[in-house]
Length: 162
Image (tube, rainbow, N blue to C red; front, side, top):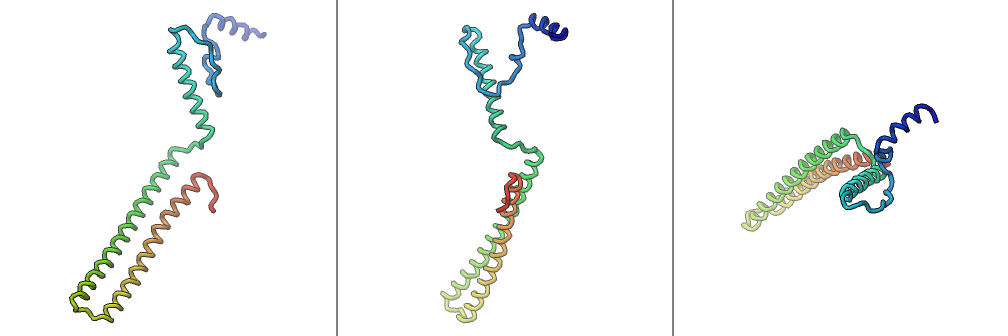
């Protein structure tokens, strides 16, 4: 035994603390024999702390740690995607409302008998094609925004693109 070790051992013998008092267990602690009634609350508190530490270790083993800035960046991208999809939904709703309104007016004209059948049918068909083209465009934009976010999720999780 070296002089430093023996000196340390002498000083340690006067202390009631040991190295084991400062170690964090990485596995379930072995159950200790029951202590007298006065120290049981302290023992329960120590066991709860050890269980919490074990839960943290278990969680860290199962999880990937993310940089908080990366999380904030992802949240910003997600919010932007929600805004973009919301704007697309508004455009989609406006397209539907405008086309439906036009259809309702033509139906009212038809019911009153003041409609030119062939010309109105051609106009309705043309407007319907425009409506479908515009709707398709809006839906493509909406899907692109959603797919971009899904790509970002796969990137963040480190998954390969399928």
